[in-house]
Image 1 (cartoon, rainbow, N blue to C red):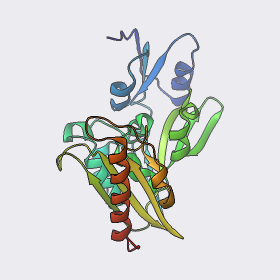
Image 2 (spheres, rainbow, N blue to C red):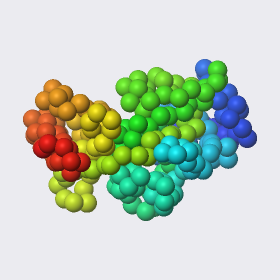
Image 3 (cartoon, one colour):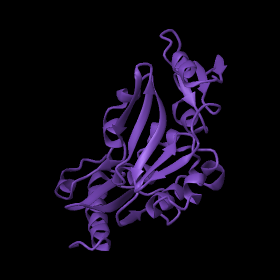
Image 4 (tube, rainbow, N blue to C red):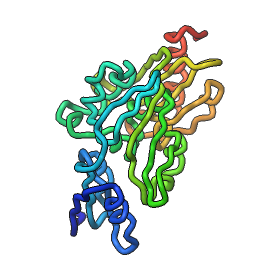
Length: 246
């Protein structure tokens, strides 16, 4: 078991960044606990940002910004949150988890089977990352493809485009089980924006004509060929639900 040798609760963001960027100490940022459970191995010290991170939800037209410390249950309970985000957030875990886990932690860990991360992708999520040189906003899909973009930084907010009709379809061993493959979609200008879980090492955006080129890994729940077939079938189902040709 990994031994934690130090715990810090900084009073401001600059202090937190300074602690995180010490070259001699492996440090992990924690908030609601999601990041601890997913990234404890290799960390020598913890920087707890609960006292300084943003836990507010703000709306500006169709854009909604979730502070990194917004709990998943608060996301669900907020009336401005798009239905797809509410539904997929409920699938992240039981009530005890949803009242502890945060939006920032969920994005930072980005579990490969997270339907919420897939839903954030179709809602064009942008992640604001504070780093010693200043803050920058990164599209979620870029962060998922290049985790080094988060190196030495702290997620401060996640902003989504809340507009557009959405739909989802999933297959699991049971209705309550984690999905083997899940597909979520949203109507956007010129077509549909589709994202999937269970077909790559993290949730991914997939073009309609690129589904056949997916190369998922297999496990005891399904072979690569089975997962690719599920992706085809579920995508057609989602597109049909959104009014497109199945």
